[in-house]
Length: 476
Image: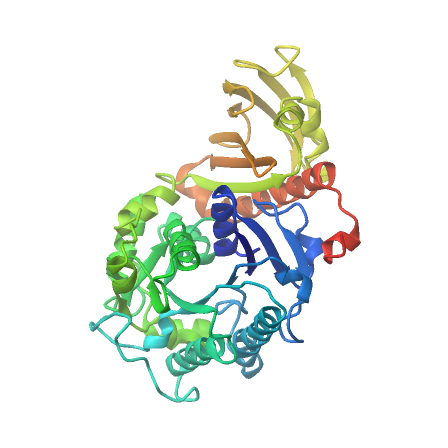
């Protein structure tokens, strides 16, 4: 099946796109600046330029498409809620969705066989409901958008869902996935919470009794896949795990997985001061159950919060970074490139002044020792790496024996996918000096590691997937 995806560069879009590509589907994506994302995604896709507020997507984007998944929208937690920001949040979802639906209607009128539109919504549509158990048959919050932050979010979701149906051809099935708190790597809630909890500074928000309806990102991607492949899915479905927890339970579970105490509550007034108008929404309660997807037989992989967090977070104070990237090259080309130590200098940012000084074997292999020197924020550092595991053309692991970290364990994985190769870097790292290192330098090091791998990703994309600018706009 050929599928058109918006929001492909976000964490959910990337996870879903990879899942669909592994199932053999072909992806088109819409993006404001396609060239920026060329070679950056973990799956192959043809990109088309689209400004969601300016009109329907280009007709070419719909050629041969059978399903559309709509995830794009201004980030809710991307900043304080000024009047302009609230308008941007609303417009990105409502105007953008209307324009997308217009594009679908036009494509269908021209003979395209689009069968389904699966669009994101959010559990905020239910408002603040305390301990009430909510499913898809529960009433939604019908309050004014000017009432408060909770009313505004409910209004956004109502208008968002309304926009998915207005003008949509009768032949196109419509599904609205009401998404809860998404737990995944590389952004979102955990990215904001982990640095706080690793320092032992976490705690309940407000009274801690408000319900949090969460879902592991893999299960959410599975629900979207089911929504476009299973004709029984229609209308609103809740994209949440079947076991919501209170904020107090969430805090205690996250602290236990991280291995640090969480005894510092954040009083409600302080939250409202810190995040402005969004504060009330942060403290609102939605105890949401995925009744429809369960009735349709969807199998959740992560049923409990402990299972979900333990899958994503390494034990103790280890930091974790996972980077995935699809390359239009052969397994031999890609693996040979990464198994040549000389290429390490090529893909390392210049500001690190990275230089290999010696290797224990002529070629990288099991047991190889590699010594190099670099500068971290101007400070000279010597580093020794051991190739701990070596599975040719599948995976290898390098681990630090001597260097700036108390732990550095880097797994390189290679997976044939859709005529190219998916590469994955999974890095576990820990700072020296225990909790003191985390408190005083944790956030800085996390940022540095991300910058290093962002640079690496860009260079690798340029080496393996250089594409003319015209192709990024759908002209080739």
